[in-house]
Figure 1 (cartoon, helix red, strand yellow):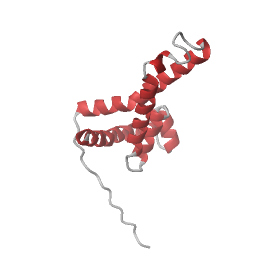
Figure 2: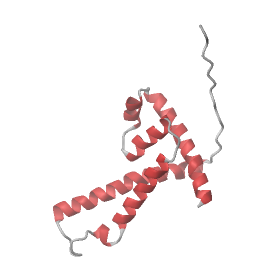
Figure 3: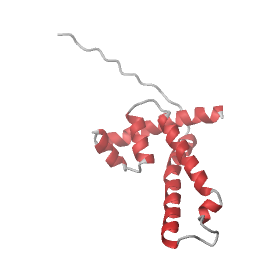
Figure 4: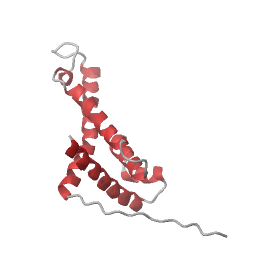
Amino acid sequence: MSEKNTARVTRTVSVTKEEFCETENYLRSYAFYKKLLKLDKYEQEYFGSSALGARSVYEHHGEISLAHARMFEVRHFIMMMQNCDEKLLLYHHYVRGDSVERCAELLGMSRSSAFRLKKRALTLATELYVQKKGKG
C-alpha cells in the first residue's frame, strides 16, 4: 500500500486589530442595509404612500439605491475570495445572516471549529480588504 503524502500549507498573515475590526464592520454593514430595506418595505406595506408621493422617505433621500449598492459590494467582496470553507462561512454568516452555530451545522463541523474558522476567515478577508483599499 502506498502512503498518501499531504502537505499542510500555513502562512502568517499580519493584520492590525483596527484593520480586523474595520473589515468585520464592513461585512456587518450588509445586515444593516438589509434591515433598512426591510423597514422601507414595512413602511410601504403598512402606511402606504407617504407625504412625498409614491416614494418612501428612504427612497426619496437615495438610501434605497445606496443600500442595494453597498449590499452588492459586500457580496462581491466575499465572492472574490478563493473557494474555501472560510468563504462559505463568511457568506452564510454575514450575507444570509446565519449564526456561527448554524454555519457549523451546514459545514459539518463542531461549533468550536466554526468559531476558529470564522477567525481565520476574517483574517483572510482583512488581508483582502487592506489590499483592496490600497488599490482604490
